[in-house]
Image 1 (tube, rainbow, N blue to C red):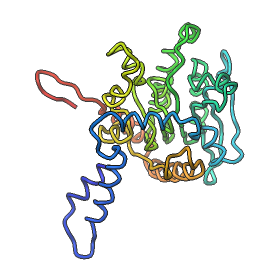
Image 2: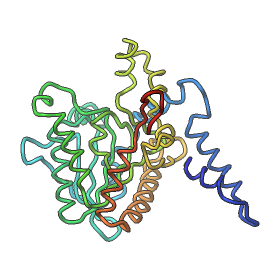
Image 3: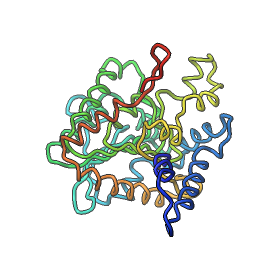
Image 4: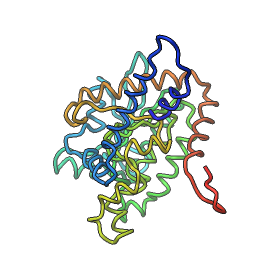
Length: 311
């Protein structure tokens, strides 16, 4: 959105072309996404609460609304099936699409079964298996991201949690098919990043994406998880922050009041964004698309060296 505003500001004024109105609309939208321009930590923390809202649509909700006839594929062919990650084949616009995403639960029983959306190594190995299948048969991939992070338990670590995340990232770098990742709720740490190394990374406006949760960050920096509110602001984890930092490729507006109030409206927005981005990606040669993907992620980040800011 900020890129669009910058482009409009550079265009010459032409008779009958009302660029000022378009620029004003974009400025108002940026103001809304940024929480009304407030300088305190309230805006960021409100986004965190909305991203975690219990009524927010999850991966299977989007699949049910967008892809009738979805066929779920289970298991990693090695250890077990991890319900915290779901995936399978969907019919979409007269073609086949591979959909993979994190899945939370709605009540205590389903949340326990889904491990609160925190995948174990077998979940990431399942995702890799489905990605390899899609790549083999030329099937585009959509990933839906909504997790506090990968499960940090001892058993998961013993089964190679870090290696599973790393190998999933490696798999995504090598894919020849178009890939679109959409953060629909929480995008927490490497557990989220593992499914987000895509050609296009988009966020719903009330979702968050960060290397760590605000509570964990506060516990480390201030030794007090109650300082999560200022930590949320410092982490720059909102969609507006991440679009400005060019960590993501775009922000998707949510229905009035948030996605938790209108699942069908949110699904329509996601479906339209998917269609637009897939159409663009499919026009790019697979080798060029892969190279652009790698270069995009290599550009992310800023560091200082000898007093100079480097990108």
